[in-house]
Image 1 (cartoon, each protein chain N blue to C red):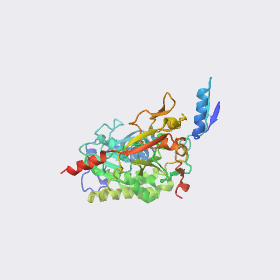
Image 2: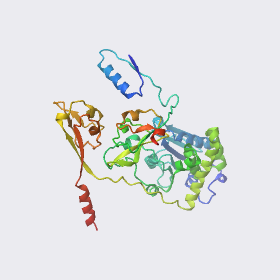
Image 3: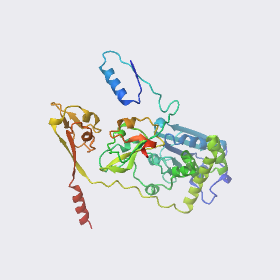
Image 4: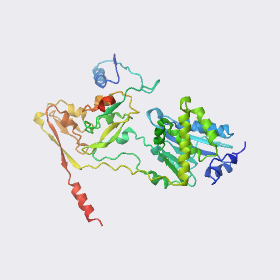
Length: 110
Length: 323
């Protein structure tokens, strides 16, 4: 039995792999409240540093409602934009970003 | 129960509104309100339903908001009149369609009465995340491409309002639905004062002032649109220009140490380790040339080449000979 933070992707994956390998009953408790219920969670929003984004759109695979296409492109592919009013700052997209271009909004605008 | 009092007519009695004609025939007035989660579809329908009820109409309202919390579709049928039987509006029977989101409005267009339906729509586009999951160069957004002018040509009476921008200028984006209520009120036989009173009961106390202002702006917008056609909408942003290319993956098998990083991280899942435990491309058509594998390979075993496709020259030549 393990307790993990569901917004820590690396830890989550590792624990899941352990659980699959374990012979017997494995229990994983994902310990983070839902962002929608019972209270809506809103943390500081993240933003994308446009010059760094290489439009791989790995973050798009998350299906996050705050992510949309930006008007700029990289080698013809759409770069990504974060809707500041929808982002709750869960940082999942920053964890999957391959070039570390997703930063807290205050840092990104510098 | 008596029908609506004609003296309540808020449109100044200049023209007989289609809804007024329907009311005369003692048929219920059908208002369909659609949008996505969080926009205030339910609030709009509640305000309308309670107002109609307070005026002595029989009101039936039914709604679906299943996936609303995840930004999914929300719709609400409001029917009111001397006598209402079914709580839902049949296809092709809605007198007014109020859409708080552009694509939702288009989705529900077949519900409008073909000969007299009024279409009131916010031009705000809320793009679902999977509509923009496409890494191919020059990919187009998988979202409706109809312009407001094209859609207006399909309906008898249509108003495409940028209500979200109007509300934003007022300082509260959430008042966009009230801008549309203002627009809706111009097509129904209730007085502005009654609307404002009903609204005050439904919006949070602190935001009554901004919402009433939004309501008036919505009314004024429709007034202006009726007397003079609004300015042409800004042109759609064209698809980004790009140089078409063909992707060629250059793999050096001797350098691959089977670490699996590229296979795990390829967003298109088009790489795999073969029997010799070296990386290979499984589906060349899927590869978009995103370069992730090239950048992430610790041993430089993969290189991505974007070869210029012959296509641009051909296209240019074809355009040259066109009359």
